[in-house]
Image 1 (cartoon, rainbow, N blue to C red):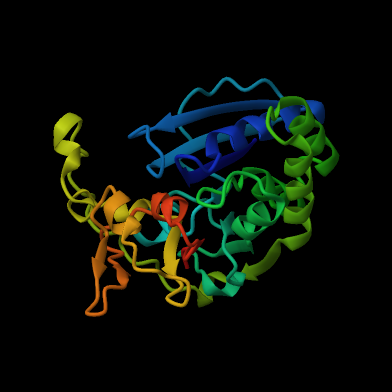
Image 2 (image 1 turned 180 degrees about the vertical axis):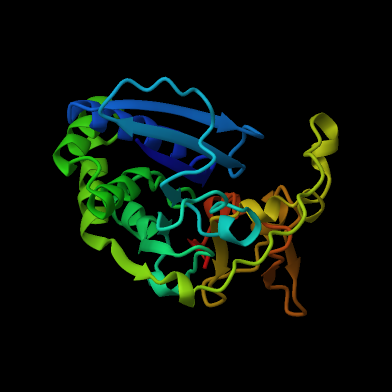
Length: 284
């Protein structure tokens, strides 16, 4: 049995990725099981999904605690979430990142693969400029890196079950398969991963959710960050007025400054900016 665990943020398509993978496996004539786990159900919040693949009926119904493969749709999760916890020695870590595989490490060794799925999704216009949907590009990379299912079956699943822009998603899957880079990592050369920071307090609901973003730690949800082009900026301050997290300040000349500890990357500022002086770029 092959067990795969997906880690992403709300809006990136982690749950749909696990479901599409199961459909592709079914088209290959194998048995699959797919299910999600939700925490705070909102855009940007961490989301986990699971897929099991076997040639025999699958009777397990528990969460996957010791996966063979961990897929990370948002590299920012590596900073504050123990996404590789329980990964089997010699397993595969697939990360959506423009950085090379050697930029990452595994405490028990294994293989690391990377691809710039966000860049692919933006190029293929899968999702929006402020929330690219990276799942199909990541699945293409997963098919190429593992060989656990065929790329033909993945494309068939996308055409059959993706309701919006199926051709663009199929092209993204092909791009992901071509773009993935895989490097082996020797156990003796990998430093232990640092312990993740203590979990923040539970997110309050209702009116209390209006507390500052840095208090609620929602800045860790960010997958894209706003970058301001001062040459285009007219200092209209729309970004400051529309920001729901008070993430903007003004410098001595009246130009906006982004306070990233408050910003969760919602992209409202880029949408509302009249001169299009704000671009959302991939969070490094």
